[in-house]
Image (cartoon, rainbow, N blue to C red; front, side, top):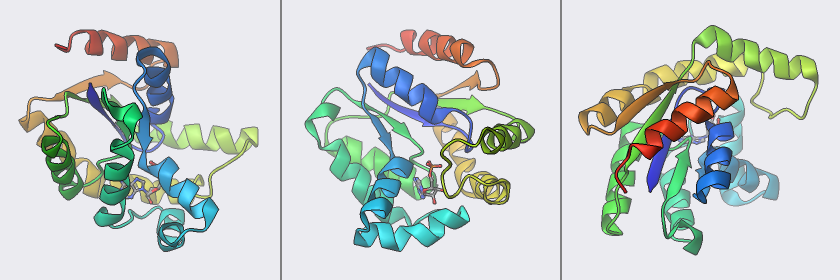
Amino acid sequence: MNLVLFGPPGAGKGTQSKILTEKRGLPQLSTGDMLRAEQQAGTPLGLASKALSDRGELVPDEMVIDIIAKRYDQPDCAHGAVFDGFPRTIPQAQALDKMLAERGRRIDLVLELKVDDAILLSRVEARIKAGGVLRSDDTPETLARRLAVYYKNTAPLIDFYRGQGKLKTVDGMAPVEAVTAQVAAVLDGVPA
Ligand code: AMP
């Protein structure tokens, strides 16, 4: 199964992806994690993307389309994957459809985690207060920019996928276990 987990920054995509990896054996393909790994390793892609991601801006489509295609061709994606934080623009979604079609695959489902902005901000503020390990783009200011970018560039994908009949929405404001249960119920209804 190929699944897109969709939602604003802080909606819980990463948390739910990890649970899906554990429970269903689907690898989590997070372009954010891939870019952070490139940045830490100081590769040309890492250097080219760091300033943009630190400001909460999107990196150019070709960069993420390229890394996702390479990652998808690894053997652990033979039975599908969970796409986390990709696609984020219409051209990325079109490129993903094309990439999968070329491999005789398709997206089975797009799961939208719906969360109000005020809750997203309070989640980041709680993380800052707790003083854990923070990402360089996890500040209230950058989150505001990431949210604006989400509404402008990424939210139009909701209609794109609704038009394809693939969109299902769950309440991302419920406690984690309740979101996990909703996700499981939706997935169990998808034909194999
Ligand atoms: P994330 O961990 O998904 O919140 O991504 C962190 C940052 O990486 C984003 O704010 C962007 O700068 C960049 N990024 C991750 N995925 C994408 C994508 N699909 N398209 C463009 N930029 C991305």
